[in-house]
Length: 98
Image (cartoon, rainbow, N blue to C red; front, side):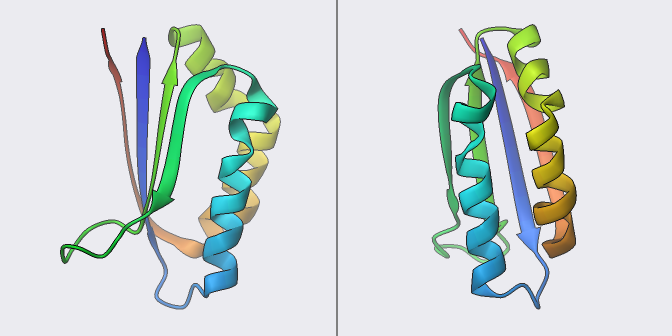
């Protein structure tokens, strides 16, 4: 099983509508790709300073399933058209879970 974790920091001028658009678009990915075993997304609760603003955690059966998600055309469109214009930083990791 592969776990994919991504965190974003939004631009200071990203408004609530843009942030919600990121959330709404990313929320469609399990249905669009059909390869997620588990999927959780959400904004930071603001409990500690310096945190990223938004996180995505997806679990995939194997590397091939993750790559299907990663390379999905709709996923790429969301990244290019909705996420990148409003994000200043991105951190990501993929690791194996039992």
